[in-house]
Length: 217
Image 1 (cartoon, one colour):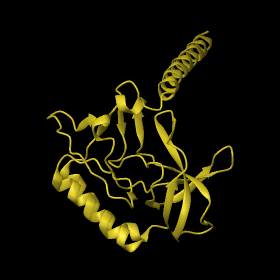
Image 2: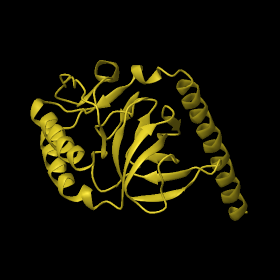
Image 3: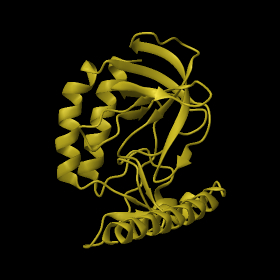
């Protein structure tokens, strides 16, 4: 009798959480139907010490990445539950096996997160890739294929900054942060390439970008 009771409770809990999860997913999907939904969200700016430290490390290790590409976005980001991926076309292969110019692949990152209830996004302090622009990206590995057979690649996971660099110069706005949080309105910084709390952090980004873009033109 006790066993039957436990099984019944477990089934009810699983069923209940399933309904809850589907409800949350439906809400999430409805939000992303509007292509401008991200303008209602906040995005994190990186604290200066983290920016300087991570950029110094990335400057040394990114040239050792197994896959280095010049790409152009094909489509806007495709959002799924709590994250997203973006399809790009390979313009040039600097390093990487079984990859060719003209091929289309997806890029994703474990640190890319969207929190619908809080209306916050973690972009790893680098903005979405914009249509018509060329980007230098550093990838760690292939992690599988989509249903249509497009290969999906992962950005390196050991650092907080996404190694994605535009070949175009951008005007980066530094939006004031509060004492409690470094999240700021995305709409106010939507034209940025990088998100930093001050000029010292932004300069670290720009110095890293300059050195890498010069290496991979």
